[in-house]
Image (cartoon, rainbow, N blue to C red; front, side):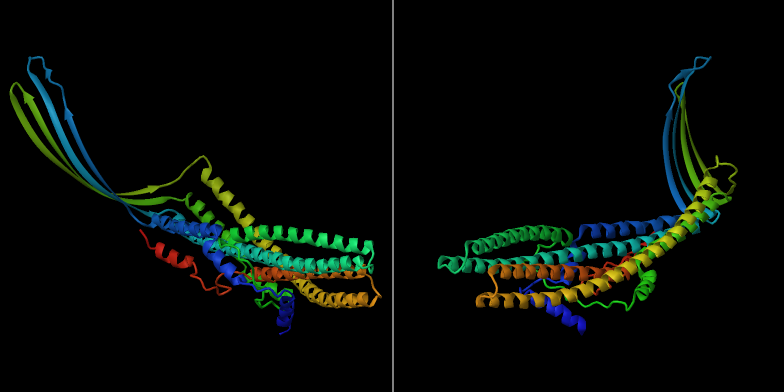
Length: 453
């Protein structure tokens, strides 16, 4: 309940009606973001590799058809007899081959591919979290720019009122030229800040549109979503080390490297292959000699089964080098797992500390805004009573303006760290946020593809 009070008090500071929420932006990004669509398509293509990996267990069948014509030019032998030959042949064969043993490399290849696909799934989750976090940052930036423009407008209206009042009082001799000039300078400054704020708002809209694929709205809603945050950095680390997709990527890369070593080991072992074939050839011959011709027709059948054992003796050291390379890759990936764990622990500590600091800063800044509003109102009343001058009022208004801008930035930072903590837990996804979208399910596509021949 304490959080709700803080969020609502911040939203009451800016009374503009907003129309787009964080969830709206994330839904649009999930459907439209090109980078995310490209990553999904890459996974669909990667699934075909499991069919290719299983090909080593399946037979290969080839059919072959042949047709040839042979005709000799007429020749004359020693007796002066002319003759020539004309042959036509047709044939066909079917050959089936099946590997029986390849040093276990086929099975290792399938397992390696499975780990590579799981790695791709983790990469998709990581990419989805990265894009969602960028969308949230763009949304918060858009919110900050909208809120800043509203603050600048209010500041412009206040300074204009003070300038008009100073001009009126000076015309009747109740105010000095100096005070009028100071009020005018503050009014001009307020105009410049408003113009700069509008320009920054347009740039924020462009960044938002690029990430979400939706037209930037006229307003965005105050980020009010309540997210469960672990009670301590240690609890955050515990979840991150189990659920963060970067850990999954590192672990699957290590498992893939281990299977790759088995693949390279299999290349050093004997290979046993079975081959069966059947063929039929038909040869038609015609012999012409001195007006006499003779025709022959021959048919030939050939059925055979071969069992061959291939023993690699020496391949210029290539396969042994690949095996040694795989061993070194395993060590590299094992170190990568450890480094990923260390990086996550560091990121969790930093993010949690920054989150706590941002929360405290937002609370204190909200109190500062309220106190400064009271100060401006009191200083104005004292000026009307003659105990303060206009410069005091303008200075108090400048401090209020800065306090409101600080609150906007504090709110933006708070929600940025809040969603970063969610990302570290691996929950900044369409599934983790329970977005009302059709979830892309890579496992369903994989299960459909893996049975193809």
